[in-house]
Structures are given as structure tokens and as C-alpha cells.
Length: 390
Ligand SMILES: Cc1cc2nc3c(=O)[nH]c(=O)nc-3n(C[C@H](O)[C@H](O)[C@H](O)COP(=O)(O)OP(=O)(O)OC[C@H]3O[C@@H](n4cnc5c(N)ncnc54)[C@H](O)[C@@H]3O)c2cc1C
Image (cartoon, rainbow, N blue to C red):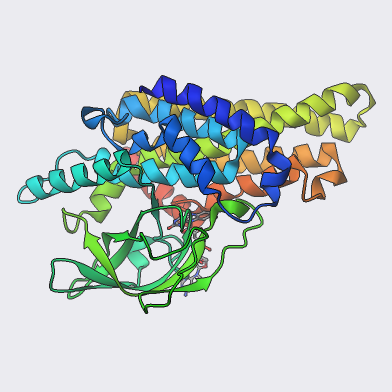
């Protein structure tokens, strides 16, 4: 199966999801059947290299088709698309960095292959990295990782926003290894740790539900908060590389999250336009101006998305600053477009069953996804100053 075939497959699935939109918007849970359908459609293959039978080629080649797959899914169900996005976003740490320096080269390759193989065998990946109070900055992690004597570690700490919990088999996280000062990446094998709803079924002391996800947007992502206590974890096979691998993968995963929100805005814009066109000659001046602004901002959003993909095609991982600019610009445009759409379409968008009201909340996720607003602007400015001639 190639990426075009997967895109064709998910186009049909997204149309089916869109037909069930009203019911899906009321959901506060993930349906495993949706992810079985996406797996059959080939979406899991985004987590493995083409050399092993997956879809990944390199960042310049694969970002556009992977983004398109997620953007299309998001036109039908934003929460399912966001959870599905975590899979290539997380495995992207290994995919975008095929080689590690000595003495980690062989171990890194073996770990990369094992993780990719798990995707080919039907396992979804996610991340439960965020910690309350860290503002999305992994360098501020207070979680700890203590060696267990079997080569593995026991991770302890409070984590939140674990999108896809209960659905994923493996989740990455960050923790400070015992005796070290910098956070590193760890992989949690969460099979059996949660039920399908993301609840720890039996309290065995390793993980406790700290707060169930009750998002006003992206409601059905099961992004629960947990307290881990000595949870078994495998360290990234290139120890101390957290900053390096995040930097190389940053443009890729930023683009994936952005694509999800572009799809949400596109489906909302299409639905609103279908409604507004029939009453356009009765719009009051304010509504007409607001709609004109919707069109300008929506056009800019689509241009920014296309340019983002072009720049990653041209520069690969070197498009990190461009990806951060595009993600922030699209996050702001998406919120603004949805606010204006809701003003024009009216108070009915407050209804829980309104497609537009739900999309307004869903698009707010982008600004909080890694790196979230404040951290993203810090990083953007730091990279901007560094890019100016001194
Ligand atoms: C829909 C959705 C899905 C997500 N999915 C995932 C996911 O799957 N995996 C994942 O890891 N993350 C996920 N995230 C989380 C995201 O990546 C960010 O980490 C998260 O949104 C940051 O939350 P926050 O800004 O509320 O930060 P918080 O850490 O809660 O902090 C809030 C603000 O207050 C400040 N602050 C609060 N307390 C303190 C303190 N004690 N000391 C210093 N400063 C403090 C912070 O600097 C920050 O600016 C998701 C977020 C959303 C919205």
C-alpha cells in the first residue's frame, strides 16, 4: 500500500465519520472500531519506514502525504485525527533520525526497527509527556526514572494530556534519569495498564488516574492525567538525545498537528459557506464584513499550510523555524476564522450539536499542542534572533 492508497481509503472513512458528526460530537470516548478501520486503511504504516513495508521515506518526502491523511480524517472527526496524529508524531523521533552517533548506532537502529515493527503489527503509539506546571517545556520535567536492574527503568511522576490513552499500546514520556540532571525520553508499554477507556483497571500501584479528560474541545481524545509510580519504561537507545531528536523531528510533528486543525477549519468553513451563501443578500453590514474577513483569513490559512509543506519538502528538518511560524499563524487564524464564522452563523453555534461551535473549541487545541503558545513564542524569538546577521 502506498500513501496515495491510504489517502483514498481515509477519504471514504472521513466521509462516513462526517455523516455521524452530531453523534460523534457528543462523545467523550474513543471507539476502537474507528482505529481498526484506520489501521485497515493503512494509517499505522505511517509509523514504519518503506524499507520495512511502511510508508516513511524521509521528512521531505513523507510530511505532505502524512499531513494530508490526517487533514482528511480531521474533516470527519477531529478527535480521532488528533489521536491518530500522535502515532507518526511519536515514531517520528526515530524515523526522522535514522542514524545515531557511535557508540549508540547499533542499539538505536535495533530499537528503531523494533518500534517500527510494532506499528506494522497493529500497535498505535502516543505520548503522555506533558506535566502540570511545566507549560509544555520538557526541560522542566520533575518525573524521575530509576534503573530497575533488568536494563529498564521505573518512571514516577504526574503526567497529563495523554491523548489516546486506552487505545495506544506504547506511549513516550520524559523523565530525569537517576543521577543525571537532564530529562530524557522513555517508552512506556501501556498494554494492559488501561482499559479501552484509558482507566487503569486494577490498581497495582504502577499508575493511578489523576483526572479523567473532560475537554470542551477534542472531547473524545481520552487525554487523561495519570500519576505513575515506578512504571516500567525503556530508555531511548541514544541516551541524552532528547533535545537533538526533538529538534530534528520538530518540523514534521508540528506539521502533523497543524494539518489536523486545517482539516477542522476546512470542514467548518464548507458547512458555514453552504449556509451563508443562501442568505448572503440578507446579511447585515457587520455580518457581511465578518464573512469577508472569514474568506481572507481562510485563504491565508490554506496558503500558510501549503507553504509549510513546500518548505519542509525543500529543507527537511531545516524547516523547523518555518514550521513553528506556520503552526502559530495557523493556530491564530483558525481561532479567528471560527470566531467570525460563529458570529455570522449565529447563536445557534452555542448548541452542543453545532458543527461550528464544536469546531471553534477543537481548533483551540493547536496553540496548546507541543510546543504550546508561550514556549512556542519563546523558541520562535530565540531562533529569529539567531537567524539575523549579527
Ligand atoms: C487537546 C490537547 C491534546 C493534547 N495531547 C497531548 C498528548 O497526547 N501528550 C502530551 O504529552 N501532551 C498533550 N497535550 C499537551 C500540550 O502538549 C501541552 O503540554 C499542554 O497543553 C501545556 O499545558 P499548559 O499550557 O496548561 O501548561 P501547564 O504546565 O499546566 O501550565 C500552565 C501555564 O502556567 C504556568 N505554570 C503553571 N504552574 C506552574 C508552576 N508550578 N511553575 C511554573 N509555571 C507554572 C506554565 O508555564 C504555563 O504557562 C495536549 C493538549 C491539548 C490541548
